[in-house]
Each structure stands twice: as C-alpha cells, then as structure tokens.
Image 1: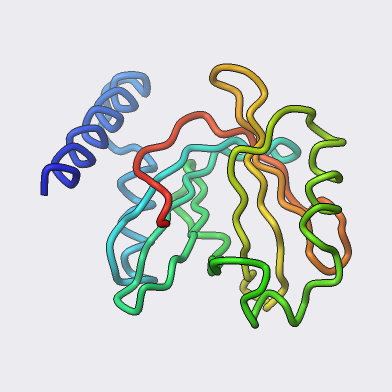
Image 2: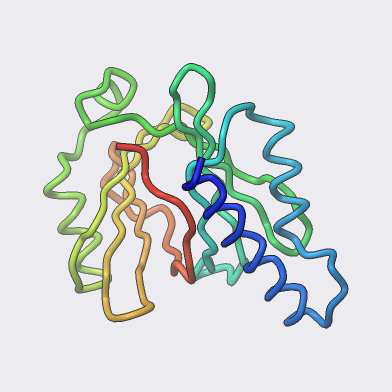
Length: 175
C-alpha cells in the first residue's frame, strides 16, 4: 500500500509539473494516455516512462500494465494527442515459446548491434512480442547521468527497429 501511495504521489507531482510547464492548462497528454490505456488493457500500472523517439521526435509515454493473468503489456502513447499507437507483450526471456519461434538472432549479437549504435552499458533487457507477432529485444543503454537510450532490435532480422531516449520513469520492472 505504501508503494502505491508513493507511486500516486510521484505521479501527481509529475502531472503538476507538466501542467505548470504547459502554462497551467491542466489538460496534459498523460491523463488522456492513462485513460486510453485503461480502455485497452485492464490491470495495474507497473511502470511509466517518458520517452522521445529519436527519428520521429515524438514525445511518448510508455505505460506498462500487468493484467489479471500476470502478463505485462507495454502501451506506447503519443503525448500530443493521447493516442495509443503501439501495444507490445513482454515475455520473461528469449526462451519463451512466443519469442523463440521468431528468434533467429541471439541476444549477444543483438546487444552488440545496439551497443554499436550507442556505446554505454546495458542495464536492462526486455523480450517483447509486437502486435504482429514479431519478437524484439529492447536494451536500456546507460550512457551518462540522465541519458538512457532504449534500442529495440528485431530478433528475426537483427536490425534496429526503434530508438528512443528515456527522459524519466516511475515504478519498477516486474521481476
């Protein structure tokens, strides 16, 4: 209960600061994104990240929802209009049957590809199933204080499919 109250308090502070930075209008994209995400997936919020997609420059909220069956979902929401534009299912490891059946590139090779783009230290790896069934690795690469790159590598082709910069996060990864 204490963790939940801490998360809500922190989230409220973030919303307040965004409202202030936006001129005090109080209708920020986060509220709309959370509302839209809850329409798509039921469960509890595990983590919230604020990202900028590097190529498109889109400011994005990545909302992690743990459903009643224990499945973790990541919903990507465009901050500017509150639209959910991507849904991914996270699996525990590359040996998960959903991931393994699509995987042609091992994790070490995928990590080398990500690190060739952004040198740093991989601090977290996720194994994701895209909405179309494709598998991808997502590497969080720590570069320097306040700079973490998220590099997604397709587990079939080995190509980089998405890059973003994490601005902040709230919550914890499910263990």
